[in-house]
Image (cartoon, rainbow, N blue to C red; front, side, top):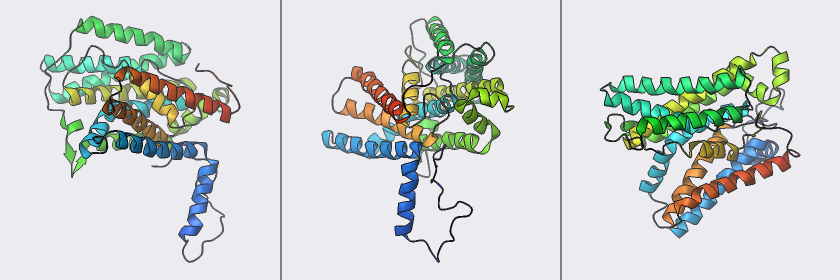
Length: 353
């Protein structure tokens, strides 16, 4: 999977009009071209830097804890990453478009409750899955309507709906969990196919679909156009309001799917579900090189950001650091990346609205 917003030089070897190759390109010819492409592409530099950082952080945790670099622990990290990776893929599209959803965790929570209640009244697996997806889609469309038709700034609209969704969780659950749900969906996260953990297949499958949407459809191109310059996108004939509605609806649909995966993994619905999902998804997206002001983004970088967040969380637990420090570390990483992004792009010239 390549970066979704390739910079100049990324495909220097295959541009029309390039000098014809000799009988066979040697590694000494290819490597400088690849490095040159990376040097000129902001997202590629961020992806490469994040990959190197993951190696360094992983090595540090491996030295600090003998349990970090084990197959069981790495599989656990991947399983714990599956819901976040699904939400982050949708969040990446929304932020590329110049929007944001700080209340996506509430959508995950409400959809998970809907799935749990569906099982409690005796609905089969397929019906429960459809319920979760529909609830996520509807709540995402509600955010999209507020941002596109009502023209409420995205951060205000999604902050308001977040409190509504979370209040719904407390009202429905009444302070207690939904526990003892069936294990029939557990293979979606805890199973394997041909020796490959199913969590990996889900992560790759969702990101592949989103990559296709971004790179091969008019909808994906319109997302980038709106993120770069919404006024110009309107003047060029793009149905901006419709694209916004679709983008938030797509994020809601993925949040509903993440809720299904959550139920499949844990077989219960906790009272505090979804409280950190938005922060972690936004953090992973920004760490991966997506600009908070829109127009620039990378699904591959966002996926690396998810792994960074989950590896840091896992490593801190293994070395005995209190989980209370996790939001501090993640928040610090986000601030550092935003400062770096602002310096690279010449200061703040945009807003979250």
